[in-house]
Image (cartoon, rainbow over all chains, first blue to last red; front, side, top):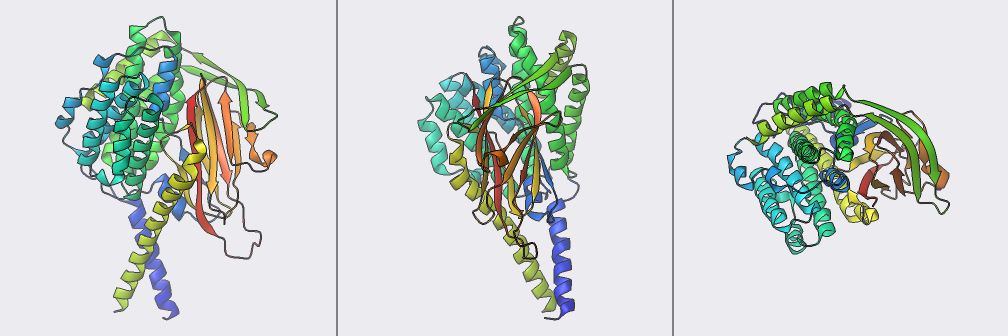
Length: 300
Length: 146
């Protein structure tokens, strides 16, 4: 093969890889368009180039934070599993798969077995609807069903379920769907937290946790920007997140470095840092109204 | 015929890229995830098919009341990754080079704050040699501190 041919092949390959990884403008039904994702970037970057990731909220971690802040389980707040048949577009299915995932994590965290089973079935059905049946090993679902009474095992398996879904979507160049699932899940978690806060107005811990989500939101917006790459559904959702960010500007968070203690035996570091969160009730009410508005738009 | 060759080579390279991503996920599942023990994976894995000398940066929020486990997991050909945890004020609060490049470490915070997790895949000892590419991942797990 001549040098010219080799050069042509490399140029064409580079162009093809670029087109393949960057994708184009998308619309409501453009879920299959290619995306240049965080994970994709890791495989295609030039040597020496830094890869930046933005941590996304974990459904189980948010549910755990709410549970430890003394919140109570209120099943009426959750999205009705029966409503899953109403979601006809891929974008609404993806957002609501996140919503139901948050409901599943919440029900499992508070050891509500029957609700967990109902939400598990809904999540499974919606994942199949989104063409993700290949994401889950049959054994995983069977294991979830047999561990339904063991909270820690169940939460572990729920985490595994969503990890498999995310990995499957990344592998199939559908990171826009993954982004909508993550955003929908966080929105439902915050909707639940706000309602728990209004049910227990004297629980300052929940209010602080809602206020602290300002930091999570910052990373989520940047993550969505990266994942969007022209997909209108992700861009629209991110605009809503930015509206929340504007309201969050009314909450002041000051972070100070504290004493760092590493155990002599090794293996663990405790960071005694100081964070001051100025929880303004008026801003909190405005935030919760916005969370409710966006969440209700998603589940309608 | 010439165009066909180009198409075949291009398709082969695209396919191999996708296979490499999948391989890293399988590696994460089979080799790395167990190092989290009773910590629950925070939804995603970070990293993938990396080259020697590669740097990654993960922006995270660590919450009070939770314990976290950081796991660096690379294929043996790449060696152990250098991990640094940096707080919102730019102070390095953990550096695994001070602990023999240990790849698993637990962190807890007294109050919720933003952090950056930086990782560096060790560079090739022989700078003139072709750099090795393989799977290098960072996993973050959490559990309730109570």
